Image 1 (cartoon, helix red, strand yellow):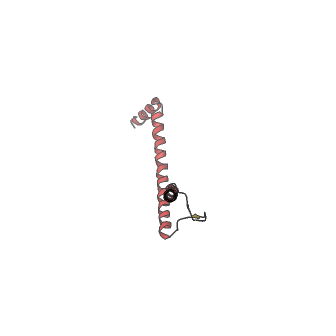
Image 2 (tube, one colour):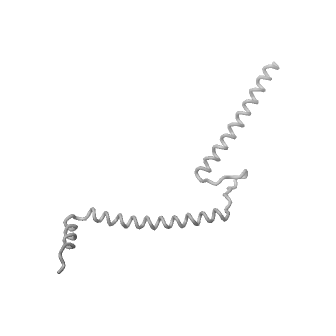
Image 3 (cartoon, helix red, strand yellow):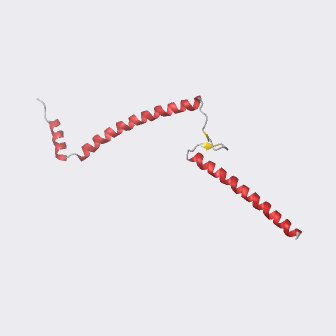
Length: 108
């Protein structure tokens, strides 16, 4: 009987350790998923923990905002050029030919 209780005690200890290990692995996994997808982390009381802001991060945000504005302007210019190319490509060949021929007329 003592041996049966001792074996059950060992089994219970191993199960408790396994359950604890599964809980820790699950917590690490959910924290990793939150970080990966940009969700704020939570403290033990459920309050959101946001990263601290310092001068370096504020400067990086400013630089990235400026670069973003430049890229938007460049994209607008590319869209305008693409619209002109589309107009030329889809234009009637007859009208395009007339425009080219009107440029070839010799000037007196």
